[in-house]
Image (cartoon, rainbow, N blue to C red; front, side):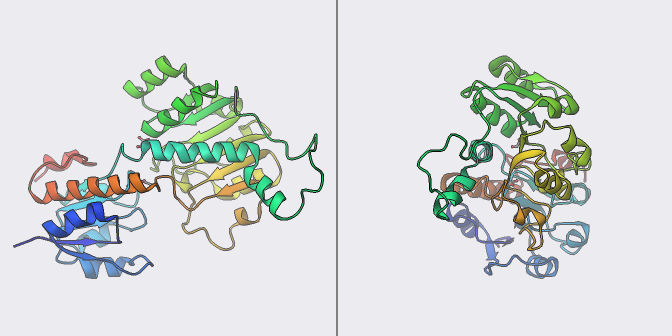
Length: 330
Ligand code: GLV
Ligand code: GLV
């Protein structure tokens, strides 16, 4: 008999077809994501659950899913899942690292360039009929990216892919990270990046970009104090998780002009709430959590997610396990 799987949203067919052919599959169809209760109701007999980063998979949900053996997350980040609790129940958690690294680095660079040079402002200027003088010596001036100092907070896979691109712009690269490993040694060797503490990075960088996972140590790691440390006129880009930055403090730093601009793909609450002060600011670029959203990458994430799920339910070790300890409990 085929095992039962609940998929919390339609994912690209490259992965969904594999899941459908291997398991008795239910896919959540509405565009609005399922609530906690709806997830529990749909997944109650399931051995497998395919989740998105917006699904709250906490201990209450997990306690209500007695047959669950694997949670295959369709994302690299997994801060929406209580992994510790899942591990204690012997549930394997998998994610989709690696395949989205370059696509996310591309979007990060789109935000860096757009924020530094004010591309959306320039676009609005033209479309709103404000372009009255052919060429203006002082018209829409921005910051140079070429030769500037880039501060990378979190030099993991994505941070290092961003740093690699910075080399083409002859940037000086500073980074802060809690780990020292092959990736960090490599960026030092290959791209001349220098390790520093967070405060020095914030004080020296012209452009700061964040690439840490969200966890208790990184939550609100960039607050009012840290924003004040940043250079006047600097630019901040965040494609990691919104809660790493205190959004109200960031809005203040943008409103006062202390920061020239920001590019944000992630927010404390997604979708961004209608009363968010960020919506009123002209010097911030807002994108709706689309860093990994290329056709090819989303298809690869779907395949990877399906392979992880299939391996785990076939009693094999999946290629991308978040909680390897799970194989030692029980
Ligand atoms: C997207 O934010 C992801 O974690 O994959
Ligand atoms: C995520 O893939 C990271 O390690 O930066």
